[in-house]
Image (tube, rainbow, N blue to C red; front, side, top):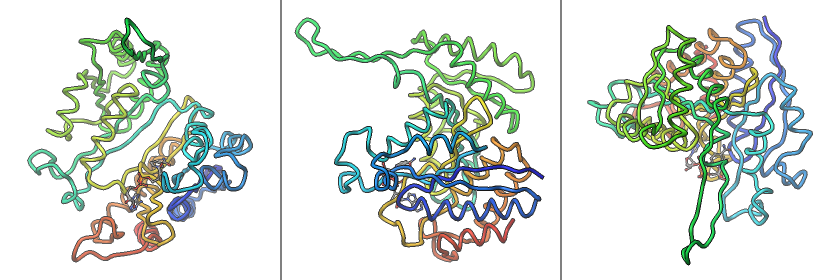
Length: 361
Ligand code: NAD
């Protein structure tokens, strides 16, 4: 029996619809296991701009910080076709995302890529490469590297010249490596650390620190892989991977590649972790303004994000397994929202999918 507080950020577009289903699933888990979850809702994104003129208020951040975990739907409207975008970039809906990630010190992004055998048709790989299923997570460093280094453009010898810098210190590498080994310990116990150590100094430091951390986890196998090879291996034989650990830009690219090979964006959860147990959990897709309010959005990525929340913020592995198994059962039973529905399947609405997962729990 545990008592936990969860900050909910429904956000914009389909966000409120999918978060509502995840909350129903969390409540069903609480009922089944005798836990008590209470919720605090905050505004972020376009809805916060409408209410307060900014995408995220300091009060909302304080609420998130004071809770045990944060569950987010998605933010943003139709880009280029919404009043929310006629303003400076730091006042647009997505600026709320950057602000909350920074305020909570979220340095590790965890994105699972899991191929459900029932959705294998949607996988763009030949079956000889994908196998019947694969199950990997990409652990991406979120707050350092090329995206945060010093940059400038100047004229050098009459030529416009741009410079970006890629900086990592050993502490930034160590803290995410520790997280990656912890995640691997709860999975199939293998970490593939991805770098470009044949060229980059930052990668050579990355590799050295990962090797130091690996010594503390003798039961986890560690291997190093160059990023160009990893990009190829992901489409050649994704089944070889368990946890892929990598820096910010490599992770940005590889995690999108990994999402693509699962074939269905509506199924992919994610977690962003910090040094404490507090984490932010959200689907990998956006706010899908094209289908908002129609009751057709697929809530499974958000429900699976709630499962990650149970696992990583609350250490409730059995409860998380239960939710993931319920999702697998629902898919096995042919229950589908329109985005993943094929002939012969049973088509359900957003709340119909929530009902089905709860029934399977
Ligand atoms: P998107 O992921 O919202 O939508 C892409 C396509 O996938 C659309 O056709 C949409 O209908 C479909 N789709 C997405 N999620 C779905 C679901 N759960 N069920 C069924 N179909 C789904 O990407 P986009 O159209 O590029 O962006 C829309 C808005 O979302 C933009 O404002 C963008 O900035 C924002 N966005 C927010 C986040 C976030 O909050 N983390 C992430 C990405 C994009």
